[in-house]
Image (cartoon, rainbow, N blue to C red; front, top):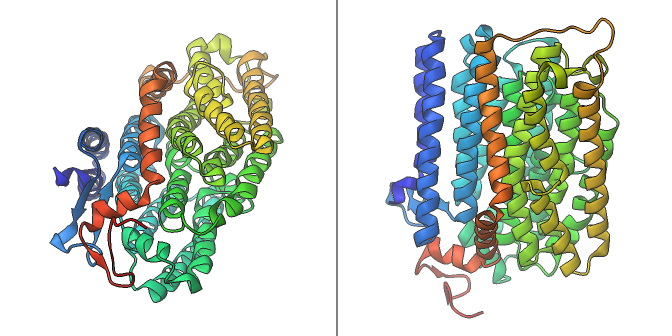
Length: 510
């Protein structure tokens, strides 16, 4: 069943080729995007079941054994993230039927969308640092094209800001790769763990670690490297904003978690010292930025930054419960944040704006939309029994268990400010009467079906994760145990490979 590990990558890549060949046959291209996302989700679920029942799944591409060849690897974290990617991609693909205009479709939206999903899954499943870079570049090319598709002034300005910062991150990533390869002679993540943990490559290891932290931190939009996100995520089509909000920054978070629990885990407190202030500052600055905004997508963009800080608490504390909390938060946030951006698009259809001062009255005009907004909004704010409550509870519990009262206080206060932002959107867009001169439009039934079906699907998923938090918590615990036992990851990939630099068989007692 090793082929399952490559299926979540092959489905969108082949679909992208087909969508590109279809050209201006928009209906067929839409069907390809939806069908590919369904196939990708099914294959990802099968992969997760395989990992759950039999442990980590690996594949040596071309039968070149690690660490000399390209390796794909799926543990519980990688597998569940490919499942969430498939579900989110399917929701956005259906939403795009009504949201993406003919011009963007003719310029290749569907092909770029599927290439982006392939890049995301490739990043989650690669076992090699250089190929992680390759998949980041695949995502960058596709995402830049998606931001700039409309070619409006706002879109092009957002695209250039997005591209400029990501090029800087790319250069830092490449420099870190060069330092690590020069010091260790390998870029296989499992092999890097063995060599770095043996203490034989200490000269450039910390420098490479800092460069990787900055590169991945830029892509994850952590403090103080977040400014590009609220400047660009509010400019493209809503379907594009939603897939970006749900997935792109989470790939950066995944890379941070993977690399700093696997390669740099034994660096004498280096990880905790590096990420504690970053996690706290990211939470605080993001939520204060959101509180100052009056445009829905800008509010939600700053909240992406804030919530990334919660996920970094896992690295800041690096305890089993903290890493479990980070994994649970990662799963919850992808769904909730993508859904809030989709809801913002429906609000825009009714009011022709996302400026809160010009909206209002939606609780009477579209009461069902009010309910669909409340589910992800209350989950983001951490209201029980939704998924966000359990995610935040785990973060606070992890902080208290580590006797870190300061981090627990930051998490709680930031949660209160998050509630404030969601209440502000509710009061302005839904509860208050529309202002004089406000535009009031009723979307067609056909458009509403395609716009609201995925919103409802993600809302139901949020409720299910909240009410059935036990299985999700068990999955997060399994992922956490694997992350905190990097030698098991290395053993699964390298097998009986002997590390010549240490003369130590893999898996021998340290």
